Image 1 (tube, rainbow, N blue to C red):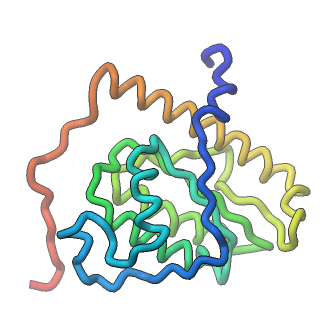
Image 2: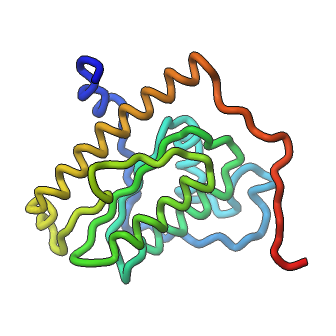
Amino acid sequence: MPAGYHKWVPQALRFLPMPADQDIRGCIACGYCKSHGQCVFHDIVNELAPEFEEADGLLVGTPVYYAQPNATLVALLQRLFYSTPFDKRMKVGACVVCCRRGGASATFDALNKFFTISQMPVVSSQYWNSIHGRTPGEAQQDEEGKQTMRTLGRNMAFLMKSIALGKEQQGLPETESVKEMTNFIR
């Protein structure tokens, strides 16, 4: 490991909280974003878009509800990823989930789909990025979960720094000029 690489974490990560009381609508597939470069609903999604474009990575966290991410977060991510026309390749993505007992893996998988469809490398840790607890402060008792989060933070910072160095030296991977889109009904 490079000397002092553990110090990258605080410098590399910036916290942009999503207020829990915000009413965030789901996508209505109106197509406004394709012609205007932003979502038709002028709310936090359009506010976060420039931050996301500028960022080297995205870390998303959610509680688990019925083995799924929070519905408001899903609405935000669907609109944010769909409405933003910029290239997301090689921005790193990571998610963390908190559950009482079960549903973490399904939630983790659902959130990672946003990254993989956007050619964003997914950051791994020593275990799936979940921590357990139901009441405030309970997750602080999950020693393995806390260690998993610390490892994730270090890995995310390292991967963002490594990709930045790679871009400097080699640029981004080539893309095909035409993106094939196939519908399964002919």
